[in-house]
Image (cartoon, rainbow, N blue to C red; front, side, top):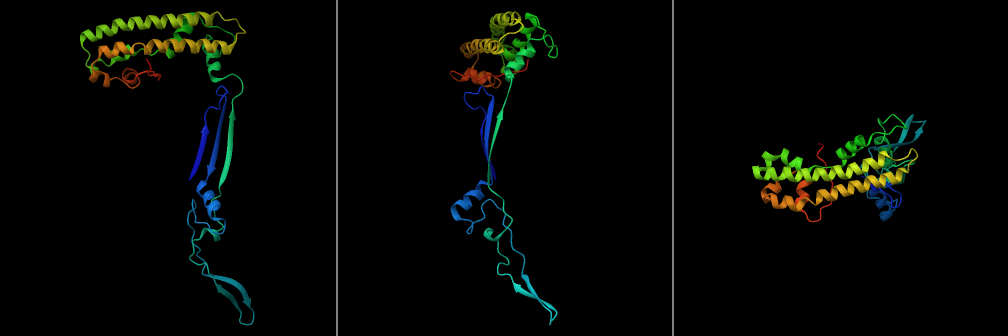
Length: 249
């Protein structure tokens, strides 16, 4: 049995350092710590039976025969007398990411006309489309696609379409403003500051999405709410929900 303790994000490293402490055969380590090397119980080690009945101790030239001695440990599985043991080890692994963070690298690629074209800058409309597609979850589009499963009435569908238009307008404003600022950045722009602008836009967008929960609760019956897809269902039925989800369209 092995075990690991993983720190996926070491504090104050901006997600650049990961560390893990790995234990190989920790039961064997506890066995030796508690019982000593000469009184092992075999924790964490497969039992190995001594199958040697006789051991050669010499040769009698007069009688022209070997001299044998009965092995007193024949049939014993005591791990203290076995040379085949699974060692206990502790290792520390540290992973450090150098250079730009993953978020910064992703932003640099998204600002180019095409990822391989270094030094180019996509238009504001292109940047907006890229970030709006990845950062905006249209919860109402999801509901309309599941209209049959949710048993939506015609009146409910019409209200959803009206509310969706308002939410999409908010997304257009948030990501349109972001795209214009990113498209206008100078060649030697501050990448970390640009990432902060992107993070702020995503946070604003999700705040707008979360604000739709009361409307959806009023619109749908409890049975319809339970049929909502994962993520949206939790947003509607859980107070102060802050999870993020995306349905890929």
